[in-house]
Length: 150
Image (cartoon, rainbow, N blue to C red; front, side):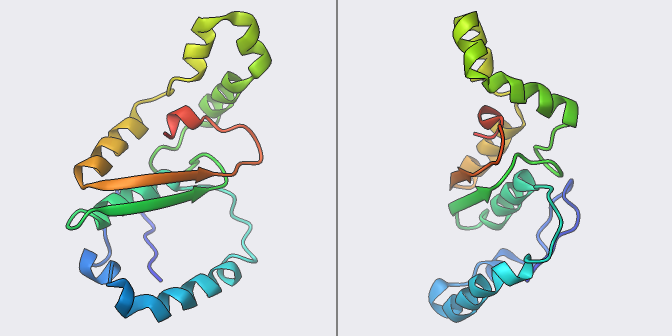
């Protein structure tokens, strides 16, 4: 288990070769980890998300070889990279109100479907630069500014 506590300035705590072993060599340890994962976080009260920092860490780990990243999140990033202040997040949550889109025309649709910042775009360029593809799965309880994450 590797923990990186600095979410603003990501770094790899070990060389990529140690973090990304061959699946055939690490399969038993990986299955143990996946079985233990629910118990590791069963008693946590942490609700913040560092999805952007996790994507940055993946881009650093995949620099030597490229690969595929599967990102799973339950909310928009609230700490680390891609985190936005509460006021900006609250404002963008209103951007997805379908009733207001229907009544205000194309300009509002364009605004609602456009990212609120270029941070995710810059991260995407970095991921493409290391030959990494990303599948993003978001299962929020409320509204999420998905255009700013994609």
